[in-house]
Length: 149
Image 1 (spheres, helix red, strand yellow):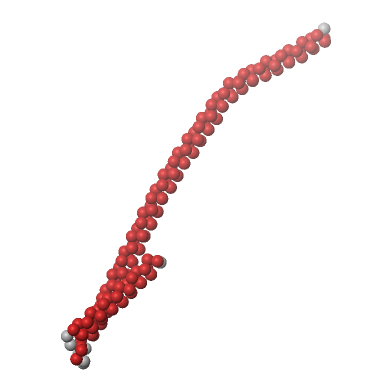
Image 2: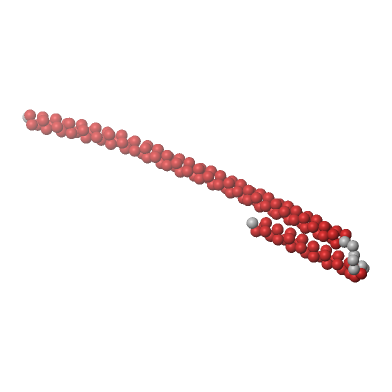
């Protein structure tokens, strides 16, 4: 009987352990689905945050691109204004040089008989045209030099 009671005691102890293990498995069976839902919600939340951050960065990048485009346009407009100002200044200088040359030519007394009448008018026209051509060439050269830089 001693063997029977020892076997029964071991069997009772084993059954108690099995019963306890069954309860723990049941408890884990309830916790795992809850944890799974929490993990899935956390993953969805992380994906949502990532999408929001991506949208924010995309918007910020778009704004920066628009700002850069405006800055480039402003720089181009400023460059064109500077080129125009230099061209106007060069044109004024060429015109003033042309006027000086014409005044010098007109201020000189006529020393030869051919300088009177038609010859004198022809000389003035030639000097004026040459001066205008030189002024135009210089202005064009300055403008082309500035635009190429």
